[in-house]
Image 1: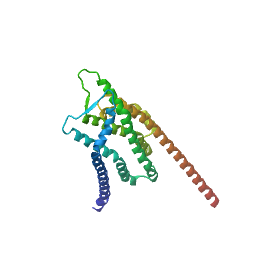
Image 2: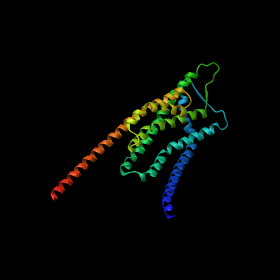
Image 3: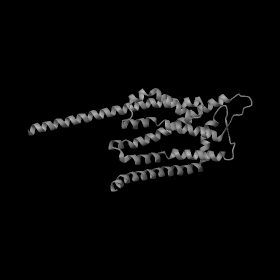
Length: 269
């Protein structure tokens, strides 16, 4: 009975710690979501800038009683997730840190910063490049049809751009994820090269699922992801080179210690 308790207690403690990490992460999201709802009018104005600058003109329209409220809620939740990224990553790190080696812990701060910066760059790329590009394309495509008024509901518009911003931000995390997997030893540059064609196909499929259902936006999102995949191969190659250099240095040090031991034995002998 005592053996059962000894094996179960660490697992229960582990689950309890995970529960509190999740609670802290969700609390951060809730707090920032409340702040986001308070400033939702300003946030919606900022997010509406790309469609206001589109030529031919596309006008936002509210068609339901709850339309504006749901739009504010969506913006608030997205802001809560984005601004909670440092907290979420920190909680993940605190949960897995006890199981890591000292050299694995050493690169964690830079990895956390890189993760946040990569997401922000991806989101900005979507806001300043992908969204205006796609809106202009569809505005031109829809223009000129007789009797057609080009209105866009506010809920559809915010769904469109928030999904695109979040997805592009997560897509820019690919090199960071590959770095972690390569550091652990799960991924190598040779493996990434061998599965390149399958990866490109997966990128197209994921882009089709997470972006609005049109080929233009899908390809527009897939192209940066393909570039990021190639960067990931380069990152994996750098990690492999660093590992080889470290292994060679350890072998040299080991040989030096063995020679010193042999000389000492000869001297004493």
